[in-house]
Length: 145
Image (cartoon, rainbow, N blue to C red; front, side):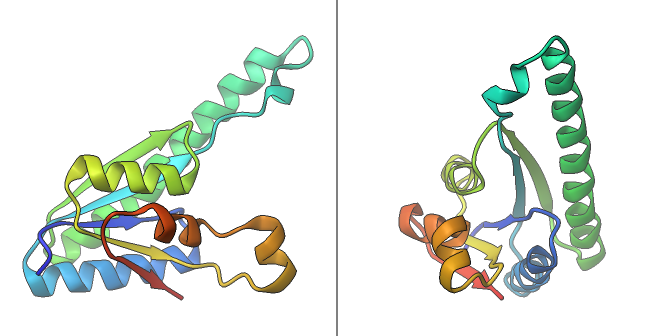
C-alpha cells in the first residue's frame, strides 16, 4: 500500500488531527513518516526603515524556533507511537509548495494534512493550502478536518 507518509503540520488544532491520523496509519502499516512544516519568506515591506535587517533577523529566528517546536511535538508523538519519524523545516516557501516539494524529494506516497475548514468568503479571500496541495501533489492526499 504506502511506503512513506508525509505529515504536514503548522502546529494548529487541524494539524494535530492530521498528526494523529498519519501516525495511526503509519503504525498500522509499519512504515516511517516525514513531518514537514514551513515558514514563509518575510515581506519586502519588512526591509523598510533603518532597522529592517534586524526585524528580518528576528523574524527568521522566531520562525525557526517555532518550526523546531512544532516538529519536536510530532517527533515526540511518533516516538511514543513507535513510528520512525524524520522532520523537515522548509524556510521561505508557502506551505503548499513546501509540502509538495518535500513529498516528492522524500519519496512519500501519501500526504496527510489538516484543513482549517474555511468556507464561503474566507475561502475565496484566504485560499486553501489543502486545495493547493490537492491540485499539485502527485500522490494521494488525506485531508483531516
